[in-house]
Length: 65
Image (cartoon, rainbow, N blue to C red; front, top):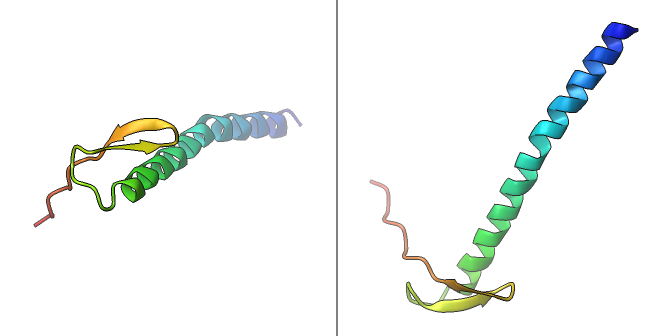
């Protein structure tokens, strides 16, 4: 019984440790997608409003060779 509880606590600890990282990554991807959508027809350096905040449009990334 003790081994089972120890294994269960270790599994719960691992899940609780890793899950916030996954949620943060999803939020970051969503924010980047919103900026990309707002800057679609804008020049680099133009300021657009995303989620109530002023954000500068980034320069396009160079194509990988």
